[in-house]
Image 1: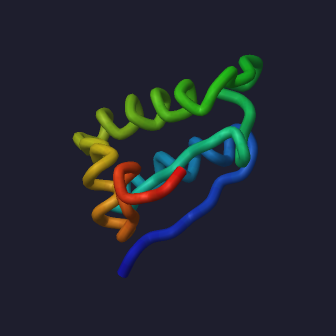
Image 2: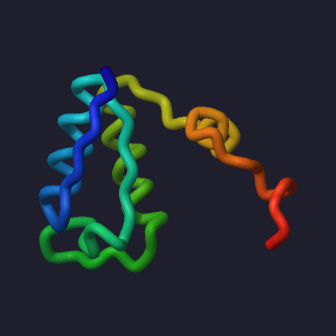
Length: 84
């Protein structure tokens, strides 16, 4: 069974990140779902949200996938295989 969950807005996104990490699931974060990194602090980029998710993963002894690992798991082509 694969765990899928979605948390929209703050703090929902990071509540779901924590729950998914605890249950062995995967996470993704992004400005399209949530524009805050803290209650009174706007995220100025996706990278800020990813950094917070990575820090939370470390609390649960979880290691983030590399871009290559994520592409493999999702069955995606690498940048060298598309005509952008």
